[in-house]
Length: 421
Ligand SMILES: CC(C)(COP(=O)(O)OP(=O)(O)OC[C@H]1O[C@@H](n2cnc3c(N)ncnc32)[C@H](O)[C@@H]1OP(=O)(O)O)[C@@H](O)C(=O)NCCC(=O)NCCS
Image 1: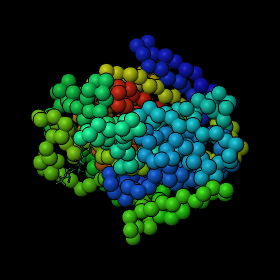
Image 2: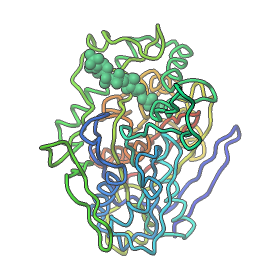
Image 3: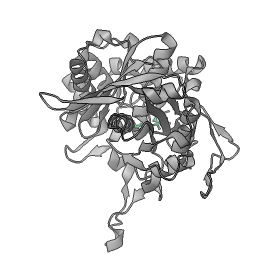
Image 4: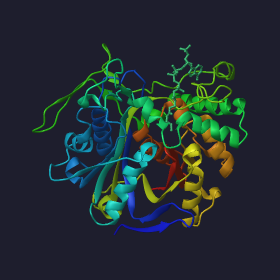
């Protein structure tokens, strides 16, 4: 029987330890650059592609799924409200199995997995199809007041992508929160650029060695069909039939990075080269209880051991992986040295480096196949992408314990502890 034991942190935050929850499939689409190859693809379609691939890999079928839990932050299509339901139906999940949308901004892709583990622990599901999808490109230009009319000369339109990256409570953009951390931790431009260069180099190595192709599934132009469902059409740029390679990584150098101008503060350290890329993409995992895995003769890729979330000051939101990881380690009676591999989302180079300094992380075992500076950060897909990267690498290296974590706009952090299956 799967089970969970929750805990509340003494100084805030909460989490849970899980027993008997395994991941049996994990796939993602390639990530398309902002206004790039996935510009005309809805997040639902990306999610369907990732979900079908994760199911196919798992050895389970849509028929076996009891619940669908998917994440998406932006309302990037007129049918965005139906996103998890449509991901499930077009992935072959029967109509009787409900679907839920979750949202914890940049932690959403973790939250889908956490919610899945908790549903299984409660006995409300044996198999959950989880994941996240995001089209940053298709964030709408919205008009919240148009229904009421617009004053002459003052058209009431909002670029929701820009709005999404500003926390109005603390009046800081996400980039400024990284600049705040750079000041607080005394981080210089050169060391922040070095984080970016390492991310790019590792992503290129992972690409060239074929590691990224293992976790990715190709996304094809054409129809997505399902019995009794209106076909959906995926449109890629003219002449492109298959999209299967991340678009954001680039060959760069310390000199090229150093030549870029700061974008968030006049004398700041963050540039286009050392900030996470704005990209589109989706990732999915199949979770089930151990007994179901045994009954179907499946090979678990990893166990979901525990998770924690915690809040921090919104103006330094990027530091939150540090207290989230600490909280989780404390409640699992583990130390950082017990972790074989760590993923800390690279929302910004200075933000990552502040977390590295705060915890004393070893860069040799952190973000070993590159991070969001190279690959991009499609908000709701990121948590699932980090979990997937981690479990494939634990498997390749024959290692045991890994931690994946991300900071979250508004001042939160989430961490998930995984053990190779
Ligand atoms: C930083 C940011 C504003 C840059 O956006 P952008 O200006 O559209 O970025 P671009 O890709 O067009 O790059 C700008 C320039 O830098 C150059 N550049 C970018 N990365 C580079 C690299 N690694 N090496 C060399 N040059 C690079 C580009 O070639 C481009 O040059 P050009 O103007 O001569 O064409 C954007 O990526 C961003 O906001 N990122 C953070 C997103 C975020 O907040 N997410 C949530 C986190 S909580």
